[in-house]
Amino acid sequence: MSDFLKEIRLYLFIYQWFIFLSIFLFYLKAADHHYGFFYVLIGLYLVYTLIFCYAYPRKSWLLLGLFDLSIALYIIVQTGKWNSPFMLYAYTTLLWLGLVVRTDRFVTVVLLFLVAYFILPAIFPNELLLPSPLLDQLRFMLDVITWSGLAFLFVAVLKNTKKLYGSFFRLCLFQNRLAQLEQPAEVCELTEKLVKRVLGSRHAHLCLFQEWELDGDWRRQFFLHSLLEAGAESFDKPGTIRLTDFMGKESAYFSFPLWFEQQSWGVLLVQSEKREGPSRWQQLWLKMVTAIVIHQRKQIRRQYDQARTLHQEMQKKLAQDMHDGLAQQLFFLSAQLFQIKQSLPPDWSERLGSKIEQMEQRIQWCHGEVRSTITHLRDNRHSSHIFDAVEQLLKRMTLGADIHVDYSTRGRITEEHLPVMDAVYRIVEEATANVLKHAKASVLQVSVDASPVQYTVRVKDNGIGFLIETVKQERYGVMGMRERVAKAGGTLHILSKPNEGTEIVAIIPRKAVEMYG
Image (cartoon, one colour):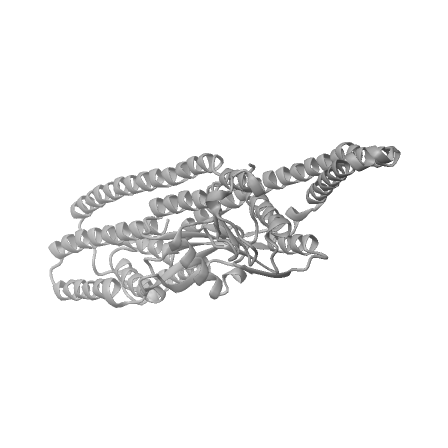
């Protein structure tokens, strides 16, 4: 819209010059002794034009308009008052002032113009009147110029209307396309392409605070960290900010914060080619873009919360079914086996005692595994931070065991997909269980590192170790861990040597996982 107003002001300025030159030529032709006056007048207008185009600041355009209007008013008084051809020039100046000054100042200028119009005729008499034939010819020429100017104005309005329609049509297409996306990186990329295409900006970056870990674009990550360092989470209104890019070059960016329910969701950065930043209609358009993005992320968050709630309800139901079914049956089976052992004759007890004890141990182990699984399902770990959930898991599993646990974390997490959290949790659980059962270790080191691209889970012990070539992949839950990591799109590595301990490393990507598993 600002470009359109600039174009209109340019048309008005050119139109004024055509009117001025036409009137100047006709009055110069009819004048017999006023040549000096007209040459001084055109000299003043040339100086006025040069000052206006090259040197004068915009905030002082009102003074230029008043100067122009004063000269026009003097000429109107000299050339016939209301019938003066210069009235058209004065109207054009007033219209130009209406486009560049505030409404209250414009009304004041109009009132001053009317007051001066009625006062000046008493001071300056009419001395420059055109003969009727020349006046008719001048008015005809002014009509031609006016209609030509209106034609150019219509073309400009039509062109800008088409441009405006294209901008909002692309906005509708953007809304439809955005509804099909889920990953934050895809949303950011689509938004940036739209903004750069419509606004003609070289660079645009949509930085989301809520889901930044799921975005693997390093440029966007760079600007996101720069914004966080500049305190962008507290930005409450659009403004200009100077940031240094990854090449070390400082540039001005227009920042448009994304707020919803008194929470900062992110910032849309647009490289500002102009000192004053985007125009008002561009800011309105950017506000509509950000509103669409916020609505889409809100819908995804609602669907995600519904899926998480359903997942937790299914876990609780499964835990209850296992408790009422499998756990109870194992308990009854253990009790019956104990009764059988107590009722056996002495000679049978000697021959079958060891077998029955093995069966009891197996049943007790199975019962413990079922109880552990029930506890695992009932733990509401997805509602808490994954780092805290893993820490609680390690404390529970190593309670009473003669082993030192060294647990460390690195990275920042705000939200994560359920399959990723489940994979991280289960890998630590299975690997820790293997250490406690088989490794005979005194030290257990567990680390969970979260980068913007992946999770890296390490479980290391100083136990007896083993030769990987001599151990079947099905043993020690290795196959289950590999399948779980592969389902999440990651890889599992096992490093072990006899008497040197074992290290399990799981790398789980954060972008390649589906939202709802």
